[in-house]
Length: 146
Image 1 (cartoon, rainbow, N blue to C red):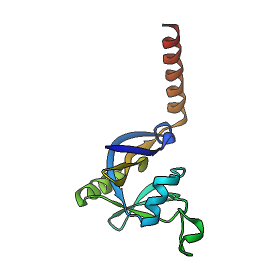
Image 2: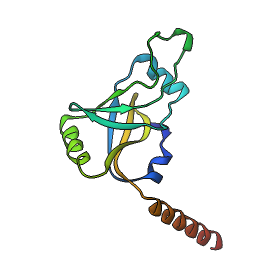
Image 3: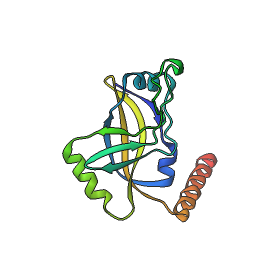
Image 4: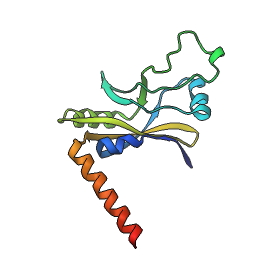
């Protein structure tokens, strides 16, 4: 049984998602407690591949007990994503294609572990976003009249 901690709502609006992957996050113990109690912010978060590993950048995890934290703790430090080697190789190949990026879609718990769902997507253009908004408005009006 899994429970969602946070969704990245802007991801589906700003990006066209082609593939999704589930990955674990390498965390410290107090970061796990903080995520489960205080939550996490996905604003401005993205994933990157560095030297054969996938990293989650700008993930903001507030301190669990601010007065009892290590002095060198950085809430926005880079965190390694735990993926299988063949998944990483697949992502390396796909991200070399023009304009494809890795975006975190949601953070959730699964069997007591904190997982992140990352999507491989391409940025939408302004015109695409406007068309999507128009479609949504038209569907809403149709539902309202029926």
